[in-house]
Image (cartoon, rainbow, N blue to C red; front, top):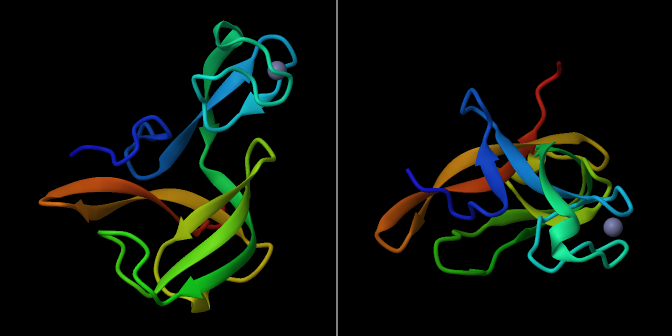
Length: 134
Ligand SMILES: [Zn+2]
């Protein structure tokens, strides 16, 4: 099955979780996410200074809201959208899996693969769920 955004994430080696595709800057050492084609977002180094680095799909939830309108095709409301601090320290908007009552601010999240419809196809999307205790 295809990944919805293969440039942003990949299946972990055991297939049960998602890793995020970051980029390490050879000039300043910053770990960028996403790993974009435009060079380092921290110091402006050229794209050829960047090398891909797998980033664990763990994140800390900062805040979240439940959205009841239809946001986009394939996204069925209500859906829970959060802001989370990723493993590289950057803050990104993330889609949370399932109902909001399992979430609270500051908790740890883990990126998981969730099957979702894109047109007629089923693809694997990146969603965040409460992290299992290690
Ligand atoms: Zn840099």
